[in-house]
Figure 1 (cartoon, helix red, strand yellow):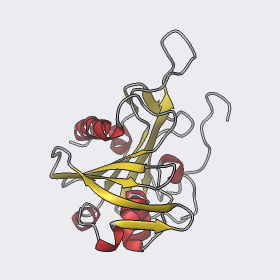
Figure 2 (cartoon, rainbow, N blue to C red; figure 1 turned 120 degrees about the vertical axis):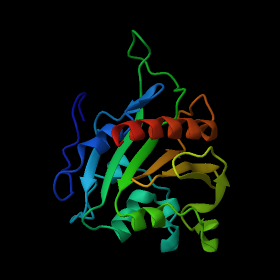
Figure 3 (cartoon, rainbow, N blue to C red; figure 1 turned 60 degrees about the vertical axis):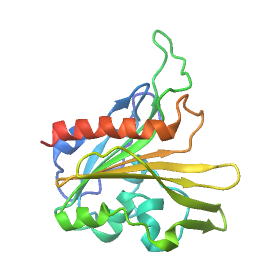
Length: 228
């Protein structure tokens, strides 16, 4: 794409989404900003075209393919919502904060202090939010194995409480990728918020495990301000 262009993939949602959800998304964290080609957007469910790239362009999944009950952890909340809760009344706001900000006064990019990440804010019925927000990891999802990817584990990470509850984990890998993702989930009575930091190059100057709760705190504060 040329500079200033936006992706023209049509929104596959049914009807207009709540504009407050777009306003609730982060557009920048430190020196990493929203991907200019695919700005944040809200998708009102149900989605008729499940093959649309509109949401995947703004979200990130690990390459692990395993039992369906592991999808929420390995693929992400967006995938679980489309697979299990693609019904009227649910909405998703999605964005990719992956574009490095140039050094002041130049067009040169530096290795970022903040990590690139993907954010999703999901609204829907209390039952849906409770099921999606359940941090209980099925036993068969603790260790992952894929012929094309190698092996890995889903390992819990301690994070400060936000909303009604917050929980986090990392997905390890074997070989050249020691950690695929760092993930935090925040649940409130009104929405679910997920931050996913993927393994990336160039590596940020700060440790993604330390950045994760900082990003989550900022994302939560902005969501609360927009969705009060």
